[in-house]
Length: 281
DNA sequence: CGGTTCTCCTGGCAGC
DNA sequence: TGCTGCCAGGAGAACC
Image 1 (tube, helix red, strand yellow):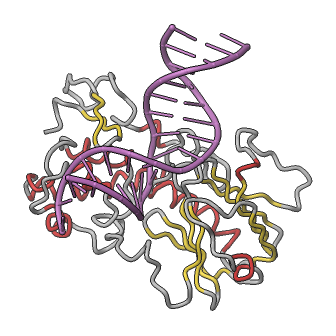
Image 2: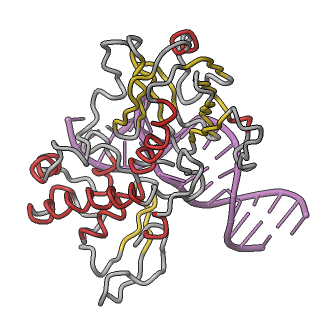
Image 3: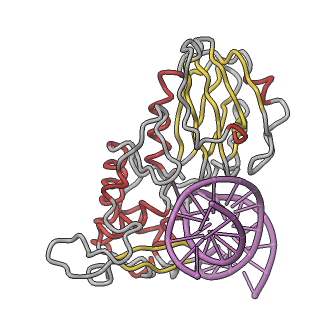
């Protein structure tokens, strides 16, 4: 499901419920997601205080005072549901099946936070105090922070013969991009997703850098994209999906003013790419 | 090392 | 309505 904007949206929605809260109760209902959860997960979390809720790429990290961090990835279909236990009734979307509630946390303030993931591509793990988690060790720069600029991207692209689409999906190059936002950023930059990354000139790389930042910023402001699964932590839908210019728009006219191209869908390394053959070169 | 393909799992939807 | 096949936002592992 979730790319950087969706994970960031979930993080912002969870902050009021988690930051500063004590985890009073923990229940693990199904420990076998993409990887098995650590056996001492319940023990470490119970009684821990969350000092900060951070995001790195598509991972969420809840820092636990003196006990390392809780690390979560939503995979394709993961969600974090928030319920106020003081309310007698909580309306839960019936499409979110309770058999996929894998971890349930209750805070001292009476909030229940449920990790639900139908496809179980997500993960929940612990980062031990002082440890660098292997899944975080090789992730590239955050696109919305200092450290991501045209020079960095140019260096990463240099000599690469793989299609730029594929290179941008590599989390070691830049953090947090997934299929939707790579398609949208390449459209904004006017770059053909099939083009070899090493054959893009410096000016176009510089423009691409800006478009990556812009599309992510726009999407966060819109609460992310809700296709099938994504909800904000509040349960609200994101609405950036209404602003897709090419993603999932096969056959639609190119949205660029004056261009009479038709959005095309191709498959690159097993994933759909959408682009305008007239204005993406 | 770089590049490509496969795989995990479940659910929704188009098409017949 | 019911069945089948295809597709899906991720990303590590295994292959050449």
